Every structure is written in C-alpha cells, then in structure tokens.
Length: 315
Image 1 (spheres, rainbow, N blue to C red):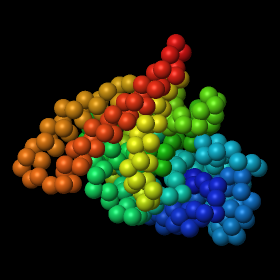
Image 2: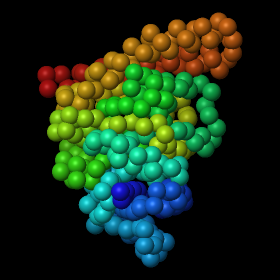
Image 3: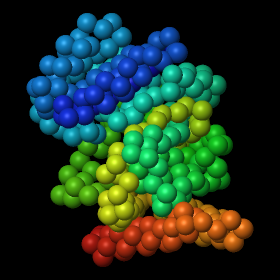
Image 4: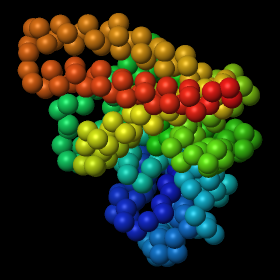
C-alpha cells in the first residue's frame, strides 16, 4: 500500500521545523511512502523546497499560485499525490518512524475510509505545570478523556482525529471533494475552525464511518513557548468553544454536540472526583493549579460557545 504524506508550508520562518517534519516522513519504516510538500503562496519557500527535495525520488513538490490557506493546500497536495492513502502532517510535528506502518496495518485489517492516531506533546519550552491533561487538546495533543469510551489508549472509531495525524483512502478523500476550504472564510470569520470535523461529517454520511483511531500511530506535536502562555490558552479555549457552536449550526450532522457532551460528562463525573481525591491524598501546588484551571478553561470554552449561540441566534 502506497501512502502519500502531505506537509504544507507558507513561511521560511518555520522552514527548519518543516525540514524536521519532512525528514521524519522520509525515515518511515513502511517501504512505500511518498512525501508531498506544498508551498502556499511563497516563492522563497517554493525555491527552497525545490532545491532541497526536487531531486528526491520519494518526494513531490507542489507550489500554489497564491496563498490559498492550509485546507486548500492540503487538497492540492492530495491531488498531486499518487498514493492509495493520503495522510496529513503539520510543519510543527514529527512522525514516529512506525507511524505510517501503524496506519497501514489498520487499512489492511479493516474496511475503513480513514485512520488517525495519537498526538503526543513535544514541550519545546517545558511542560506547563498548570495545564491539566484534559485540556491538552488546546495545544493539539491527544488529551485525557479522548478516544472510544474516553480512553486514549483504546483503538476504535471516533468522530475525527487531529489534522496533523489523520489519513484517508485517497479515492475517498477526492470523492468527497477534500476539505471545505472556505470554513471561516465563507462566513467572513477567521476564528471559525473545524475543517476535519466538517469533512468527517460528510464522510460519515457517505460511508457510515468516522475515523478509526489507533493510538500506536504516534506523531509528536511541538508545543512552542507562546502556546503555554495562560492568556494564549484562554483565548484559544474561548474560540474553540465558539467554533464548536459554529459547527453545530453549519454542520448539524457533525456530531459536535454529542462529542462535547461526552467530554463534559467525563470531566465532571470522572476527572473532577479523581483530581479531588489526588489533592486530598497528595496535595501540591501543581495539583491545585491544575484543578483550578480545569474550571477556568471549561468556563472559557463555555463563554465562547455562548458567544456563538448569540451570534448565530435564529440561524
């Protein structure tokens, strides 16, 4: 099974990280991997990619004519790919050498349209002690409470995985028309997110399946220092809540309400009691901060959601 991995870049400021992501793809143990590099509206990035990878037999370089954004760049990468499967990796991520092999193992064993894996944290500036694991999703990392029945160590079908660790049978992806590139832009709202959610909702309607999650397919996501700033995290939590409401309105069949309700239920019924017991048995400043921030981040997401309710009232 041939697997094409699409990695997109729009600025030379992140070129060093892009190189690390690309090299992790070329170092995969699976013996038939194609690296598809997409330069989004930047001639300098395009030139560097052609210089560094233009002669690589396992790589394809595609340069967009203009800046079209991440989702359309991914679509262009999938069009340029030749694999049976198209997978996506971000420029700030590094794939485990067995990543593709683990994805392929699921495709070979199961008749599923899409497979994704676990995102692990690579704390560039150190792990923030105040950030509870339940909210690692704010920094693009698989969080506590994720996965089938809320267990990130268990394989099974989920609504969608992170965009930096998701793959599709290429014929399925192209047949669905790829990502809806105008999410956010279509509504004149740059804060609206949910490209993977929207695509996987269409896939579920067409094929009756979400994404099969396999925790053994691991990708490390670099968490830069600015992403561990409390103000940045609170802002992200607010707009994530807003986006969740947006997806409910724009893509009512996405299952957004059910997924978020399950997460909130697990938070209140499992995480809060467990953390209280931990505080009582082994009190520490870090445990106390994480327990407090559990409520703060929940409130920020809730406020963003309520803002979305008001904005889309009557829609």
